[in-house]
Image (cartoon, rainbow, N blue to C red):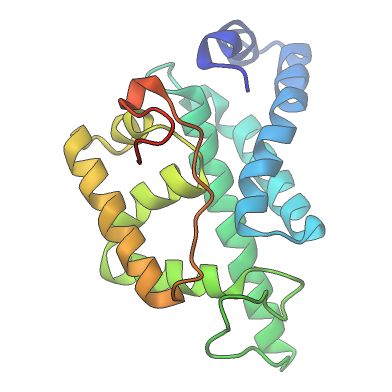
Length: 200
């Protein structure tokens, strides 16, 4: 994936009001946003719906991104929020139609709601209710694939605090989901001080 520096010129032109630049930016961002949304919503149609919402939000609020911090981190926050909002809407629709929505789900399965990972989303909701700061860091790192430093930058927390929060969140998720919980490891990044095989 391109680094933030490779996006800078395109982002600046789009923020300045160049419609062609905005179109190119959204086109390049689409696969990035889809990957983010798919971490929450494995069913393609659901991820597509969330990605469309995220791209619309990025286009609408691009001027609010002032160039401070990671652009891809900013995009990840928007995509993650869109995916989770889509899930909540799907759940409400299922409840309104009296579809069977289990109170809890086997973590080895996907939900009855159009293939959404009900187990993951329900565990995240519980984590947010009890530990909001660790939940935010966990979403950005393990689901958003950001580096520890990017998470620290976005959350405004010291690096050590971020690592502690992510550790706490992973422990909570494992307790909630069982031994089958294995978040996909983000790619090692030397800026994290991590190398392959050294842990996260």
